[in-house]
Image (tube, rainbow, N blue to C red; front, side, top):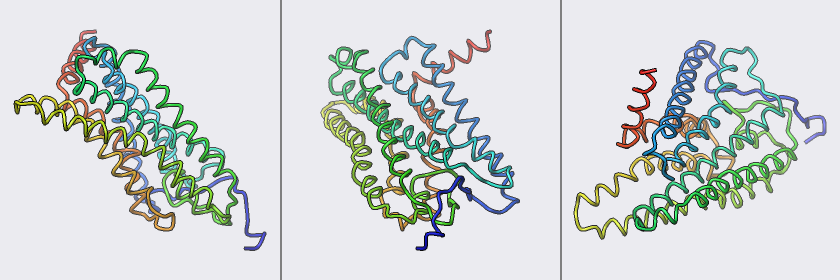
Length: 310
């Protein structure tokens, strides 16, 4: 490729979900509602947990942190998406793009490590109930929390540093509604072999580590529950895991569909699938954990009555 066709862009153009002008305002309203529901729903979860002494347990501690991360995750993406729905030129600066990508990757992976910490908590509660308080003590919870934040931050930094080394061709049009790793990578005209290998090795290891913890925890839980003689006991044990398993399925199902395939196979369907774990999963988490959890429902009702009483 000739040297004149190579450029280091100062900005990118985000195509978004639709290029039709008549779609922009309806999409703006829809995404604004999703954003408000997500922020308010997750804030209610955090406030409910911190206002109810019965919910001061490791499981709900990790759930409150997960809700906080979900708020941060959607805030990284949706405000810029909303601004672009109303803007004539849907641009994002190069630095802003890399910043958005960094926090998106970091918060996304933090979610997976928090889900793993919650799976470990359920494993200890069901398989070692007599030692639960000593195993899941404050020190271990803080350690799991620190790992859940530090590892994703380092992982994200590696990706951003590699992306910053790429040379981009004449096109600066990103076929997505935010700066996701794969669509940005497709604009590069330099070799991104190292970047793709890193995604498929280091990235796979970072994602598979918490996923393996979740799988192993639930295998042990399943074996333990099968040994419970009564059907009521089995149902009670599984009921404490239902919400978590639903969120894990949504999260990992959409991620594996989008990212664990060659870069050349990235299509519009992947853009739609991205919405599931970037926007819909954070919005649905408060409903999944509240509606299917008796303690959370009671805590939420108490919190709402307390607020109305003031």
